Amino acid sequence: MKRRSFFKFGLASAIISVLKPNSLVAMSQDDFSPSYRIQGPIVVSTWSHGIEANEGAWTVLDNAGKSIDAVEAGVMVTEVDITNRSVGIGGRPDRDGHVTLDACIMDENARCGAVGCIEGILHPISVARAVMERTQHVMLVGEGARSFALREGFETAKTPLKEVKKDWKEWKKEHKDEFKKPTINNENHDTIGMLAMDEFGNISGSCTTSGWAYKLHGRIGDSPIIGAGLFVDNEVGAACATGLGEAIIRIAGSHTVVELMRQGHHPQAACKMAVERIIAKHENLEGLQCGFLAINTKGQVGAYSVYNGFNYAVKRNDKKSDLVEAPFNREW
Ligand code: SD4
Image 1 (tube, rainbow, N blue to C red):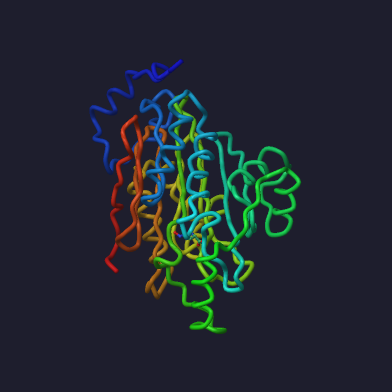
Image 2 (cartoon, rainbow, N blue to C red):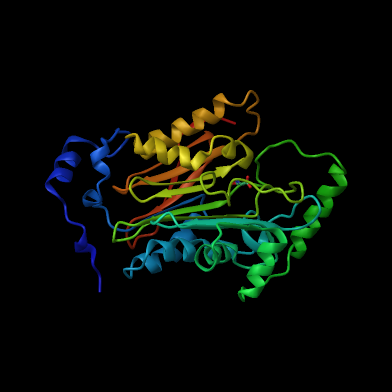
């Protein structure tokens, strides 16, 4: 049974929505009261693969499902897409030829789980959820994460894929021992971060990636780090990140976006301010692409990136997701 009518327009929220247009408006602290959660289900996710992923999430949201189930189901679609070179088993390896995956998940009660540098597991996001639900920990990495996944019965996968291995061998020939400059390009962007609000007004998020292509073995980026690649606070909203993880970690990016929303900023403004903080902290911005995507408890959405080219998918109803180009600070 659908329970959309759960969301009633309170008098105060009606007045607020009349007085304030939906874009780039700072909200007062009171706007975050749960009674103002008037938008119903919404799911947003990074990059164009978010369109497919949102469909996966929608099967849950549209059936009165919980946002935590939606954000897991949604990014699982991307994790099994073997044509995707930056998420899941189709991802590119590190410089030693290992495909090491990072993922995290967070729910409306600030419960969270993460895996870093896990190898040969089909659904890192589900392992992250299992860390959250079946252990007393938040994060497991490397061999420990893999043995936990095996013990818990998660499906394995052989990586790298044949064609991915071939590309890596070519790359190796050209790069020998040199460590690549920190550029995010078509070899290594397109992590999926997903944020969803269910019809009960509860917000969850997920993030999963194979990370920076040809990274040093053992490197973990922002994506599995709660507060960096993802952060959810059900009283305020949620944010996720994509791009050069090292730069995102330096400003605790997703947490920063959520805290800026808590201070009253619209998701769009909050993402912009976080990107500007990254820009201010780096002298050399060559190739340093980072983007944030955020939603608040009113279902308002915003995104912003250092360079042009970042986009995200938004789904609010049975129609296909809109793919939205994020505003940016500068052009490549
Ligand atoms: C990382 N943030 O491992 C990831 C890569 C990424 O879009 O998001 N690319 O640093």
